[in-house]
Length: 338
Ligand SMILES: Cc1ncc(COP(=O)(O)O)c(C=O)c1O
Image 1 (cartoon, rainbow, N blue to C red):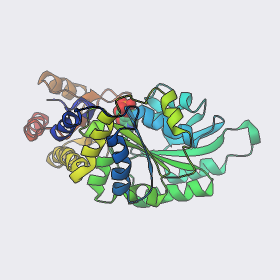
Image 2: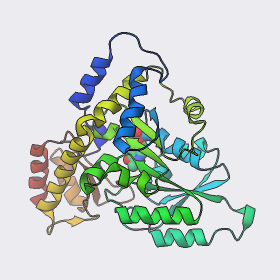
Image 3: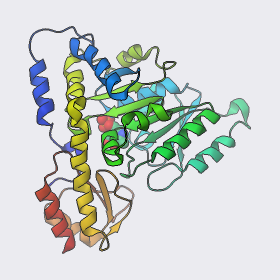
Image 4: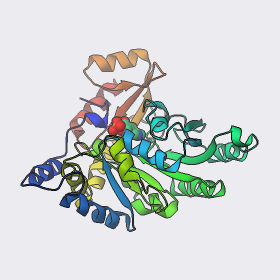
């Protein structure tokens, strides 16, 4: 019974079948295949706008290339203190942007506090060229704490980025969970409210290996293809990456898979609220519970797999995925109730 990570979930059957179906005959290599060309149009339909779609194979590459096109080497990137970009990418965003500075901003529930961000940005500039140039705001949706930015909050980031002449990046490693939970369109979640570049995740929510960098701002990413090659992400048999993304977004598969994951997480919450200490609101597919060391040990002894949240000894993170079984959720609820 695995609640460790949605990265540990299997590949969804429809996506796997799409890979098998794409495995016939020859196709042009290096993203000039028919699937990669179709992907551009399919994504543009999904978002309802022009966008440049750059398939990649990791979320780290999507984030790092995103900030590399929005941030010069002498620039700075503002994100939450919990951001994957800041803590879990081994310096790749700094490396890809040739040395940009990442600044963690305080907030609550895994989110950047917009007032704090605005004050920080207001205070820049006094040291002139001695300071890095504020260039990018990066927000994660859904966040590393399993919480969500409302559309109003995204609008506030849009205002702040305009005021300070910056770009807005969204780490959408779990954007499907956010859209499914909020019931809003992915256009409202992104470009309609100022997102310039999006890391569009699919691997966590049912794909085998597929992410995409989506560029909405036509001023950005003129050399993104060379940058992708240089980053080692120009997959020669790209058709097998692109076909996953096509299958993922067709017939709302991405939303249906994410809805299931969210429902499973919500079920844990509704059954244990009042009796358990939920560290963050459960708004997508992740659940954080302060359980205590002995409670954690008991749960481990019963065979449940989960992470103890880094930096704490008594908080567990339970991640539900598209493949989480209702019976496993019932079991963990039962075990936690005892
Ligand atoms: C919020 C977030 N962003 C980005 C990533 C990066 O994805 P990858 O492991 O594919 O590089 C992850 C992975 O766990 C993540 O949780």
